[in-house]
Image (cartoon, one colour):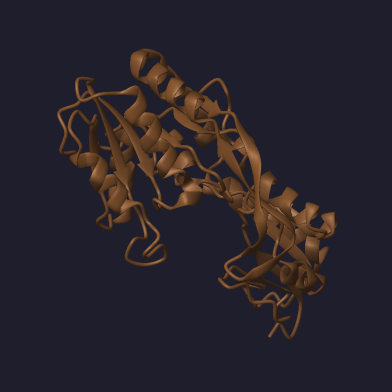
Amino acid sequence: SDVVVTVRHAWPPNWQRPHKGKLVVIQPWEFGALPEDWVRQSRDVDEFWVPSSFVRDCYLESGVAAQKVFVVPNGVDAEKFHPQAAPMQLATQKKFKFLFVGGTIGRKGPDLLLQAYLKNFTAADDVCLVIKDFGGSSVYQGQTFENQIRKVQAQPDTPEILYLNEELPPEMLPGLYTACDCLVLPYRGEGFGLPVLEAMACGLPVIVTAGGATDDFVRDEFAWRIPAERKIFGTEVSGMKLAGAGWLLEPKLAALGEKMRHAFENPDEARERGKLASRHAHEFFSWKKSAEAAAHRVRELVGGQVATANPEKKNPVVL
């Protein structure tokens, strides 16, 4: 067969060289230093495509050659994720709704979110925190914060929390965003942070950690960024020895609370920021743009080979 480029995205990564052509591996990472084994295997990979500058820096700092690592960002489906998406009916009467979307695992900061919310709001506030959990019965089984969230919900005078953990069909997701007023993701480690981009596309301002992967597409004019510092946690992740000290970001709790309170007290400003966020997401981060970035990399990688490949073969790239 006339395969010119093989692109792989798998977990765990598959490092096996294809029989013919170039090998591209798409592989995000959230923990600072890369696994030692990946750095070793990188010698047999022609290119890595990573979703953010943050991940690229992790690769370079771990010793992977800079000329092998390229940012091919994730994107958003502009036809589905937009401010006009019909809002989902949520079981709350509260006016202002904060939203968290993602697995409630330590890396995504749900513990910080709960602390900041409880510290800065009470049951008397016209506010609800909507937590859309993900992966509790699959990828994040046994790791989620469901029990802690349920405990907090049961306490007297707790500001309202709506906890959703049923699987949502993908077509309902835009309506979850448009039903809310501000996305909050005080993450410690992300390779990209797709819910942040999706929320922006749907017209929501976002409160996110500064200094991480979302810096690529989050701007201060439509977002509130939480200052954070790097915290080293050791030299191993899930039994994999790292090429250096692994680290995560630790967002400042007080700043997170202040920014949430500010968004809540200034809903008009939040809405204006949301409009800017939507424009930015649609203009610069559509899947079409991502596809263009990938196509550009393929052209560079094969230097004209695609054009001279057998014209009968419509697909010289294997994904």
